[in-house]
Amino acid sequence: MSRLVYVLNGPNLNLLGKRQPDIYGRETLADVERDCRALATELRLDIRFHQSNREYEIVDWIHEARETAGAVVINPAAFTHTSVAILDALNAFEGPVIEVHISNVHKREAFRHHSFVSLRADGVIAGFGTQGYGLALRRVARLLDDAKA
Ligand code: DHK
Image (cartoon, helix red, strand yellow):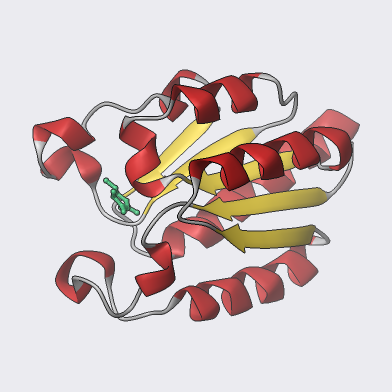
């Protein structure tokens, strides 16, 4: 299986480090991308790292991943709780999918407790701050290694 991993980020995550730092922390998305790239090298993964505020762009990247990638790590942000389109796109993707939330969504408002993406995700990480991305990449590397063995 391809060791290319799409790391996808949904709306408002471009403001990471600036918006509600008490909830999302002070690290920026550029910091997260840098850390993901460093870890990916260690894990022998290639990554494509994207963020968009537009649902269709995320759907299009998942379609792209379907053709080329072995796994998807996705923080759909607010689209987690609303997007059947992202769920349908992920259902058309065959490799491992790990869902990441920086905050512990279960400790927050009730509308954040439901995730459409969880109906497809092979694993869900929530409440580990931006460290969750690295944990997701480690899990993906293990799943890709196991699939090869
Ligand atoms: C990020 C968001 O923007 C929220 O809409 C989600 C998620 C939680 C996060 O914790 O990373 O509810």
